Image (cartoon, rainbow, N blue to C red):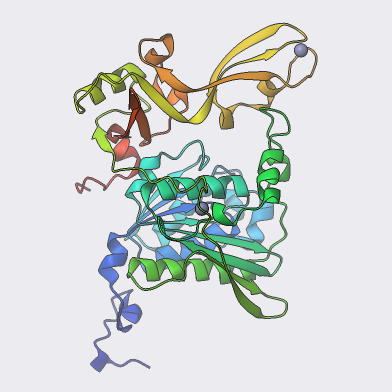
Length: 395
Ligand SMILES: [Zn+2]
Ligand SMILES: [Zn+2]
């Protein structure tokens, strides 16, 4: 047992950690970590981050707490049922450790988290339940060169994967034809996502969530301390046989995830408050060779949906992930609606007077602005205070 002669301060909640020779509590206090998913795994990871005193945590989850979550979610209580998982997790973490600043996003990691959040983060911990969201996180992390740690659990077994862009093999490098097919199956018709019918059906226990969530957090600790980590491999734990093995991924040249973006220029524009025209003007003031002529969207924007049989066309203006189920099928004949989509907003068109959020751009996103054949990454820094309140150092 440690004694007073080892310098233990009973009032210091981190005293036990400081005895570890390589431990640097200040690095943890300075760290910014994004946690995608606040289910069973996310609960374990978030609890660990709070205990460790990780200074800045951004948690995103679109789900609401249900009684069936309570068996494997140590942060949730029965009184929380019906409330946002991300928001309740944040409240519980602040209660566990007031040193930790937690930002909750009760939204979807694909539709509602701007690329600037990934760019500002030291690392991302994914506690997700589907391939589509993992693939999205992988691509966002590669664009911004942000390390990420994937975790998965089923019954009493689990897997952890650490990816450090741009050199390591990535999540997509290891994807098979079957994986791609399963992602596309989620869109059984152009807009109708089957996702909501399948969510949360993987059987798991709080024990494996604790093991894998602990393991993911421990890899995060190593990354924060610049210690060596095993990257581009699946580290698999079989809980029934107590077997552990690793599978190395082959880095696939031509993999679509390997695009790395240059550092963005920051403009004082907000996705929530400003329109595309304001963005065009703001970027013109920062770059030479302009004017900027178009905004390239990373999320398909549905402009309208139509039914050929009934001859109806209904305006929508929403990103594909946000199209609700009612718009996906014709209200008259029940056939799948055919969407008209775009991923480009040209300057001077009626759509460039729309608010950026109406074009499916989330707060603090990094958007691509194009001049002729050149594309410039632009950070919507006007949203910084709503997303990472302490980013500008005036907390
Ligand atoms: Zn790859
Ligand atoms: Zn119809």
